[in-house]
Length: 169
Image 1 (cartoon, rainbow, N blue to C red):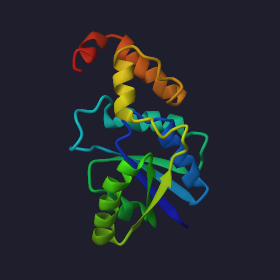
Image 2 (cartoon, one colour):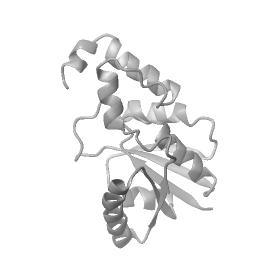
Image 3 (cartoon, helix red, strand yellow):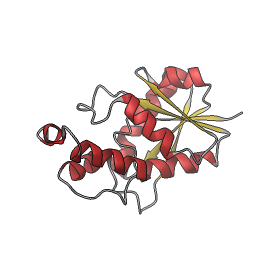
Image 4 (spheres, rainbow, N blue to C red):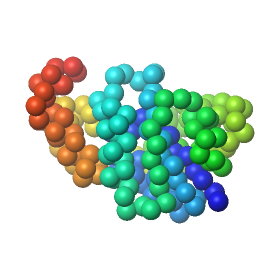
């Protein structure tokens, strides 16, 4: 059985991420999406648990996908789930430079290869960072994220405590 691991912070999960997951399901028997706490990124908008739930709901149409949340090295997760490859999505050449370095380090640490899947041009400009900013200031991001994520973003910025969230920008 060929298992792929797709790691990411997914804060929030968007249609570019979804495209990579869907395409990976055509290449592998099972796809494990790992919601990772990334200490190099600023404070997360959504907790690991919230992100995991949104991912589960966003990919429920894909029976070969399993979601996990972790706070460890990606290579440890790859070993634990039996992944034969790590899959990463690429939007632009600038993504490749950083991802290549991580792929080389992961290969040295674990022997697991990384496969890059470029997103289609319709998703290449979508970035979680941009979505958070647009949503924080009341912009409509529903065309760029699964419906469940759009709902959670709206609740986050329009619901109780929204004034506190918007003040953190």
